Image 1 (spheres, helix red, strand yellow):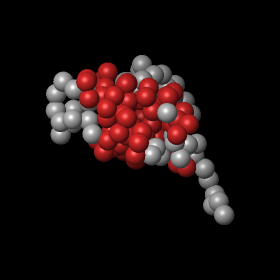
Image 2 (cartoon, rainbow, N blue to C red; image 1 turned 180 degrees about the vertical axis):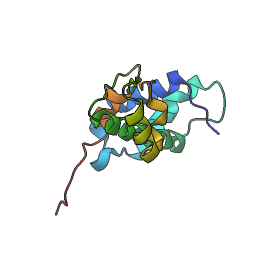
Image 3 (cartoon, helix red, strand yellow; image 1 turned 90 degrees about the vertical axis):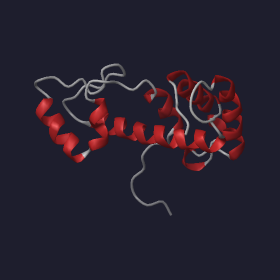
Length: 134
């Protein structure tokens, strides 16, 4: 299976930001974009399986999921998000963090570790909507 390095992930994210005008509803890209991403990443392959169009699309899905986790962390009052130190949990905020992680286990890696792709993914992931659109 594919193993993603930091440079490969960055290259994919940079490419998708450049292609954002080609994204359709919901921030979904057409197959052609994924084929181009795969071709762009092919020379970078060091380990694991090739980064096919499907693998690139799956990576983007994973990144979008992480983006949504971080977006929720950023909404919590009393915490300070930092792209380098994450939720920046201190002794004073540890209790509220522990409570939060019990309900949101996917947040756990971001206790004191940031995520460098947030601002770029913000350009790719549609804003949250509430209510029903008819």
